Length: 303
Image 1 (spheres, rainbow, N blue to C red):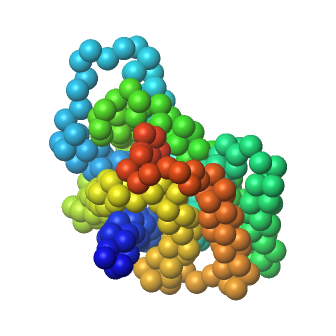
Image 2 (cartoon, one colour; image 1 turned 135 degrees about the vertical axis):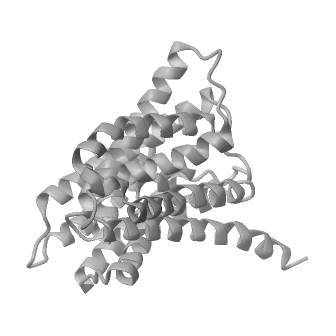
Protein backbone atom coordinates (compact mmCIF):
# COMPACT_ATOMS: atom_id res chain seq x y z
CA UNK A 1 0.00 0.00 0.00
CA UNK A 2 2.85 2.42 0.76
CA UNK A 3 4.52 1.86 -2.59
CA UNK A 4 1.38 2.24 -4.69
CA UNK A 5 1.46 6.08 -5.01
CA UNK A 6 5.10 6.09 -6.12
CA UNK A 7 4.42 3.31 -8.60
CA UNK A 8 1.44 5.22 -9.94
CA UNK A 9 3.52 8.38 -10.36
CA UNK A 10 6.60 6.75 -11.87
CA UNK A 11 4.76 5.61 -14.99
CA UNK A 12 3.41 8.99 -16.13
CA UNK A 13 6.55 10.86 -15.07
CA UNK A 14 8.65 8.47 -17.11
CA UNK A 15 6.37 8.95 -20.12
CA UNK A 16 6.68 12.73 -19.94
CA UNK A 17 10.46 12.49 -19.69
CA UNK A 18 10.54 10.15 -22.69
CA UNK A 19 8.46 12.70 -24.60
CA UNK A 20 10.79 15.56 -23.67
CA UNK A 21 13.89 13.63 -24.70
CA UNK A 22 12.21 12.53 -27.94
CA UNK A 23 11.36 16.12 -28.88
CA UNK A 24 14.88 17.39 -28.32
CA UNK A 25 16.45 14.40 -30.04
CA UNK A 26 14.29 15.15 -33.06
CA UNK A 27 15.39 18.79 -33.00
CA UNK A 28 19.07 17.82 -32.83
CA UNK A 29 18.68 15.38 -35.73
CA UNK A 30 16.91 18.08 -37.74
CA UNK A 31 19.72 20.55 -37.12
CA UNK A 32 22.26 17.98 -38.25
CA UNK A 33 20.54 17.95 -41.65
CA UNK A 34 20.63 21.72 -42.17
CA UNK A 35 23.75 21.39 -44.34
CA UNK A 36 21.66 19.46 -46.86
CA UNK A 37 18.27 21.11 -46.58
CA UNK A 38 17.03 24.50 -45.41
CA UNK A 39 15.48 24.89 -41.94
CA UNK A 40 12.22 25.99 -43.59
CA UNK A 41 12.03 22.82 -45.67
CA UNK A 42 12.89 20.73 -42.60
CA UNK A 43 10.03 22.34 -40.69
CA UNK A 44 7.68 21.48 -43.54
CA UNK A 45 8.78 17.84 -43.54
CA UNK A 46 8.20 17.62 -39.82
CA UNK A 47 4.79 19.32 -39.95
CA UNK A 48 3.68 17.28 -42.96
CA UNK A 49 4.66 14.00 -41.30
CA UNK A 50 2.93 14.81 -38.01
CA UNK A 51 -0.16 16.23 -39.79
CA UNK A 52 -0.51 13.02 -41.80
CA UNK A 53 -0.32 10.82 -38.71
CA UNK A 54 -2.72 13.01 -36.72
CA UNK A 55 -5.21 13.17 -39.58
CA UNK A 56 -5.24 9.38 -39.88
CA UNK A 57 -5.52 8.82 -36.13
CA UNK A 58 -7.98 11.61 -35.25
CA UNK A 59 -10.07 11.64 -38.44
CA UNK A 60 -11.38 15.09 -37.50
CA UNK A 61 -15.02 15.92 -38.12
CA UNK A 62 -15.17 18.97 -40.41
CA UNK A 63 -18.92 19.28 -40.99
CA UNK A 64 -21.21 21.36 -38.79
CA UNK A 65 -18.45 23.77 -37.74
CA UNK A 66 -19.17 27.44 -37.12
CA UNK A 67 -17.24 30.33 -38.61
CA UNK A 68 -15.75 30.98 -35.17
CA UNK A 69 -14.56 27.36 -34.93
CA UNK A 70 -12.64 27.74 -38.19
CA UNK A 71 -11.17 31.14 -37.29
CA UNK A 72 -9.84 29.75 -34.01
CA UNK A 73 -8.30 26.63 -35.56
CA UNK A 74 -6.79 28.65 -38.43
CA UNK A 75 -5.16 31.00 -35.93
CA UNK A 76 -4.00 27.95 -33.97
CA UNK A 77 -2.41 26.54 -37.11
CA UNK A 78 -0.74 29.88 -37.89
CA UNK A 79 0.80 30.02 -34.41
CA UNK A 80 2.00 26.43 -34.80
CA UNK A 81 3.66 27.20 -38.13
CA UNK A 82 5.28 30.39 -36.83
CA UNK A 83 6.52 28.73 -33.66
CA UNK A 84 8.19 25.85 -35.48
CA UNK A 85 9.59 27.95 -38.32
CA UNK A 86 11.06 30.56 -35.97
CA UNK A 87 12.75 28.09 -33.60
CA UNK A 88 14.29 26.16 -36.51
CA UNK A 89 15.60 29.44 -37.93
CA UNK A 90 16.98 30.23 -34.49
CA UNK A 91 18.91 27.05 -33.79
CA UNK A 92 20.30 27.07 -37.31
CA UNK A 93 22.21 30.16 -36.09
CA UNK A 94 22.79 29.60 -32.36
CA UNK A 95 23.22 26.48 -30.15
CA UNK A 96 20.08 24.39 -29.74
CA UNK A 97 20.07 24.54 -25.94
CA UNK A 98 20.38 28.33 -25.94
CA UNK A 99 17.65 28.74 -28.57
CA UNK A 100 15.19 26.67 -26.52
CA UNK A 101 16.19 28.53 -23.34
CA UNK A 102 15.40 31.91 -24.89
CA UNK A 103 12.21 30.54 -26.45
CA UNK A 104 11.03 29.40 -23.03
CA UNK A 105 10.66 33.05 -21.99
CA UNK A 106 7.36 33.08 -23.92
CA UNK A 107 5.38 30.50 -21.94
CA UNK A 108 7.17 31.52 -18.74
CA UNK A 109 5.99 35.12 -19.12
CA UNK A 110 2.49 33.88 -19.89
CA UNK A 111 2.48 31.81 -16.70
CA UNK A 112 3.60 34.76 -14.60
CA UNK A 113 1.07 37.12 -16.20
CA UNK A 114 -1.62 34.67 -15.13
CA UNK A 115 -0.58 35.14 -11.51
CA UNK A 116 -2.09 37.78 -9.27
CA UNK A 117 0.87 37.89 -6.89
CA UNK A 118 3.51 40.54 -7.38
CA UNK A 119 6.13 38.30 -5.77
CA UNK A 120 5.94 36.01 -8.78
CA UNK A 121 7.76 38.70 -10.74
CA UNK A 122 10.92 37.28 -9.16
CA UNK A 123 10.65 34.39 -11.65
CA UNK A 124 10.67 36.83 -14.55
CA UNK A 125 13.70 38.55 -13.07
CA UNK A 126 15.50 35.23 -12.62
CA UNK A 127 14.76 34.26 -16.21
CA UNK A 128 15.95 37.70 -17.29
CA UNK A 129 19.22 37.11 -15.45
CA UNK A 130 19.58 33.81 -17.30
CA UNK A 131 19.09 35.43 -20.69
CA UNK A 132 21.43 38.28 -19.75
CA UNK A 133 24.14 35.77 -18.84
CA UNK A 134 23.99 34.47 -22.40
CA UNK A 135 25.15 37.87 -23.59
CA UNK A 136 28.35 37.81 -21.53
CA UNK A 137 30.07 35.21 -23.69
CA UNK A 138 33.10 36.57 -25.51
CA UNK A 139 32.02 34.98 -28.77
CA UNK A 140 28.55 36.44 -28.44
CA UNK A 141 25.41 35.12 -30.09
CA UNK A 142 24.01 35.82 -33.52
CA UNK A 143 21.41 38.55 -32.84
CA UNK A 144 19.23 37.25 -35.66
CA UNK A 145 19.19 33.80 -34.03
CA UNK A 146 18.23 35.38 -30.70
CA UNK A 147 15.46 37.39 -32.38
CA UNK A 148 14.05 34.25 -33.98
CA UNK A 149 14.07 32.49 -30.58
CA UNK A 150 12.13 35.38 -29.06
CA UNK A 151 9.64 35.23 -31.93
CA UNK A 152 9.26 31.49 -31.33
CA UNK A 153 8.61 32.18 -27.65
CA UNK A 154 5.90 34.72 -28.47
CA UNK A 155 4.33 32.27 -30.92
CA UNK A 156 4.52 29.56 -28.24
CA UNK A 157 2.59 31.77 -25.82
CA UNK A 158 -0.03 32.44 -28.51
CA UNK A 159 -0.13 28.71 -29.26
CA UNK A 160 -0.91 27.93 -25.61
CA UNK A 161 -3.81 30.40 -25.52
CA UNK A 162 -5.19 29.27 -28.87
CA UNK A 163 -4.79 25.62 -27.92
CA UNK A 164 -7.10 26.15 -24.98
CA UNK A 165 -9.67 27.89 -27.21
CA UNK A 166 -9.39 25.17 -29.83
CA UNK A 167 -9.82 22.45 -27.21
CA UNK A 168 -13.12 23.98 -26.13
CA UNK A 169 -14.45 23.99 -29.71
CA UNK A 170 -12.90 20.86 -31.23
CA UNK A 171 -13.12 17.57 -29.37
CA UNK A 172 -10.20 15.21 -28.80
CA UNK A 173 -7.35 15.69 -31.25
CA UNK A 174 -9.58 17.09 -34.01
CA UNK A 175 -8.43 20.67 -33.54
CA UNK A 176 -4.76 19.77 -33.33
CA UNK A 177 -5.01 17.59 -36.44
CA UNK A 178 -6.67 20.37 -38.45
CA UNK A 179 -4.21 22.98 -37.13
CA UNK A 180 -1.29 20.74 -38.09
CA UNK A 181 -2.66 20.45 -41.62
CA UNK A 182 -3.10 24.23 -41.77
CA UNK A 183 0.50 24.74 -40.60
CA UNK A 184 1.87 22.23 -43.11
CA UNK A 185 -0.05 23.85 -45.96
CA UNK A 186 1.13 27.31 -44.91
CA UNK A 187 4.77 26.16 -44.99
CA UNK A 188 4.54 24.33 -48.34
CA UNK A 189 5.40 27.22 -50.68
CA UNK A 190 8.27 28.59 -48.52
CA UNK A 191 9.67 25.06 -48.28
CA UNK A 192 9.52 24.53 -52.05
CA UNK A 193 11.19 27.89 -52.67
CA UNK A 194 14.10 27.23 -50.30
CA UNK A 195 14.69 23.48 -50.56
CA UNK A 196 15.56 22.93 -54.19
CA UNK A 197 15.86 19.34 -55.39
CA UNK A 198 17.21 18.14 -52.02
CA UNK A 199 13.66 18.08 -50.65
CA UNK A 200 12.88 15.01 -52.74
CA UNK A 201 15.99 13.06 -51.81
CA UNK A 202 14.91 9.73 -50.31
CA UNK A 203 17.29 10.00 -47.36
CA UNK A 204 16.12 13.53 -46.54
CA UNK A 205 12.47 12.49 -46.73
CA UNK A 206 13.13 9.53 -44.44
CA UNK A 207 14.93 11.67 -41.85
CA UNK A 208 12.17 14.29 -42.09
CA UNK A 209 9.60 11.61 -41.31
CA UNK A 210 11.76 10.43 -38.40
CA UNK A 211 11.92 13.99 -37.04
CA UNK A 212 8.13 14.25 -37.29
CA UNK A 213 7.81 10.97 -35.38
CA UNK A 214 10.28 11.99 -32.66
CA UNK A 215 9.17 15.60 -32.31
CA UNK A 216 5.41 15.19 -32.53
CA UNK A 217 3.89 11.71 -32.64
CA UNK A 218 5.84 10.11 -29.77
CA UNK A 219 5.48 13.12 -27.41
CA UNK A 220 1.72 13.37 -28.16
CA UNK A 221 1.24 9.72 -27.34
CA UNK A 222 3.32 9.83 -24.14
CA UNK A 223 1.66 12.99 -22.86
CA UNK A 224 -1.85 11.82 -23.68
CA UNK A 225 -1.36 8.73 -21.53
CA UNK A 226 0.56 10.54 -18.77
CA UNK A 227 -2.02 13.32 -18.34
CA UNK A 228 -4.70 10.82 -17.45
CA UNK A 229 -3.16 10.43 -14.00
CA UNK A 230 -0.49 13.13 -13.68
CA UNK A 231 -1.33 16.42 -11.99
CA UNK A 232 -1.04 19.40 -14.36
CA UNK A 233 1.31 21.17 -11.93
CA UNK A 234 3.70 18.21 -11.95
CA UNK A 235 3.49 18.05 -15.74
CA UNK A 236 4.35 21.76 -15.97
CA UNK A 237 7.38 21.32 -13.73
CA UNK A 238 8.64 18.42 -15.84
CA UNK A 239 8.20 20.46 -19.01
CA UNK A 240 10.48 23.08 -17.47
CA UNK A 241 13.34 20.68 -18.13
CA UNK A 242 13.07 21.27 -21.89
CA UNK A 243 16.02 23.72 -22.16
CA UNK A 244 18.37 21.36 -20.30
CA UNK A 245 17.15 18.41 -22.39
CA UNK A 246 17.80 20.41 -25.57
CA UNK A 247 21.35 21.20 -24.47
CA UNK A 248 22.05 17.55 -23.64
CA UNK A 249 20.63 16.33 -26.96
CA UNK A 250 22.81 18.85 -28.80
CA UNK A 251 25.90 17.54 -26.98
CA UNK A 252 25.14 13.89 -27.83
CA UNK A 253 24.03 14.33 -31.45
CA UNK A 254 25.85 17.48 -32.58
CA UNK A 255 28.81 17.69 -30.16
CA UNK A 256 27.52 21.19 -29.45
CA UNK A 257 29.09 21.92 -26.07
CA UNK A 258 28.18 24.87 -23.88
CA UNK A 259 30.29 26.90 -21.48
CA UNK A 260 29.71 26.86 -17.68
CA UNK A 261 28.19 30.35 -17.95
CA UNK A 262 25.72 29.15 -20.57
CA UNK A 263 24.76 26.19 -18.38
CA UNK A 264 24.18 28.64 -15.52
CA UNK A 265 21.91 30.67 -17.78
CA UNK A 266 19.90 27.57 -18.66
CA UNK A 267 19.65 26.67 -14.97
CA UNK A 268 18.24 30.13 -14.18
CA UNK A 269 15.50 29.76 -16.79
CA UNK A 270 14.66 26.20 -15.69
CA UNK A 271 14.38 27.23 -12.03
CA UNK A 272 12.30 30.28 -12.98
CA UNK A 273 9.94 28.11 -15.00
CA UNK A 274 9.57 25.60 -12.16
CA UNK A 275 8.92 28.44 -9.72
CA UNK A 276 6.29 30.04 -11.96
CA UNK A 277 4.60 26.66 -12.48
CA UNK A 278 4.47 25.92 -8.76
CA UNK A 279 3.15 29.38 -7.98
CA UNK A 280 0.36 28.99 -10.50
CA UNK A 281 -0.61 25.49 -9.40
CA UNK A 282 -3.93 24.80 -7.72
CA UNK A 283 -3.20 22.39 -4.85
CA UNK A 284 -6.81 21.29 -4.67
CA UNK A 285 -6.93 20.28 -8.34
CA UNK A 286 -7.26 16.51 -8.64
CA UNK A 287 -5.38 14.35 -11.11
CA UNK A 288 -7.15 13.99 -14.43
CA UNK A 289 -8.62 17.53 -14.36
CA UNK A 290 -7.31 18.70 -17.72
CA UNK A 291 -9.87 20.97 -19.34
CA UNK A 292 -7.19 23.06 -21.03
CA UNK A 293 -4.23 20.76 -20.67
CA UNK A 294 -3.80 20.31 -24.40
CA UNK A 295 -2.16 23.74 -24.27
CA UNK A 296 0.50 22.39 -21.96
CA UNK A 297 0.69 18.92 -23.37
CA UNK A 298 1.54 20.09 -26.83
CA UNK A 299 3.99 22.76 -25.90
CA UNK A 300 6.56 20.27 -27.09
CA UNK A 301 5.62 21.12 -30.64
CA UNK A 302 7.94 24.05 -30.37
CA UNK A 303 11.14 22.22 -31.05
